[in-house]
Image (tube, rainbow, N blue to C red; front, side, top):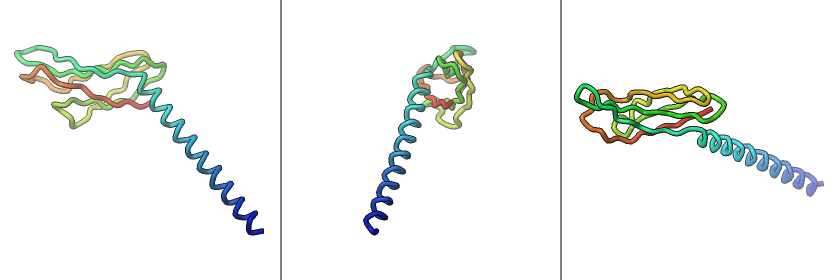
Length: 110
């Protein structure tokens, strides 16, 4: 009787562990798929004797993305951007910078 109970508990534990690992794996796959959907780049646009730092997000997928963008010059606050399916959006992060060089960053979710 004790062996049956132990086997049942082990089988249930194994099944639960497998279900959790499959769920995590699927979530990781979904995240990788979303990461393949978009690109983030930056442009320094000259105007009024200084540069404006612009972050551009391009979405190649058939669903909209909710993104947070920032630069190495202005890491906070992060700026929210909604990017429609198969489109691009841009946000000006800094106006009037004396520097042309910066790096753009972004994270998007479905």
